[in-house]
Amino acid sequence: MTAVLVAVAAAPPKRFAGGGYWEATKGEMAGWFEVRVDGPGRRHYRLFCLLDYEAEGSEKPLLVVVAGLDKPFRTVLSDADYEGVRSLGRSTGAAIPARRDEALRPQLTGMCRFVAR
Image 1 (cartoon, rainbow, N blue to C red):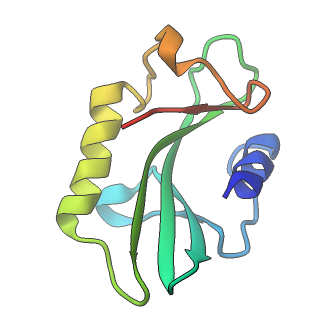
Image 2 (cartoon, helix red, strand yellow):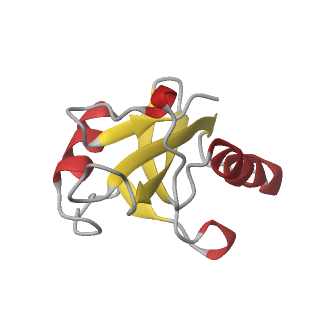
């Protein structure tokens, strides 16, 4: 997942071709992005991200990692799971415009920041 995040953060905004590992979400999750990785034990792992277009001190948007979830193979996340991700994005200020707290300082050489749950 780290390799996908680094590649996405280094690419021009909305230009990364993720090969199934990086996907724009749809519907109620429009505006969000998802890192998708399959792991051991036939589990799917997901990181939910936003692009911060108003990040101070950055020439291009910062990649904001808001939440991570996992699920059994060939299942779907619940509506409550997705609402939890959106709520976390709202409560942390990760939604645009982003909150500028010291705790949310950019990571990955200034291209990405992580919001802990």
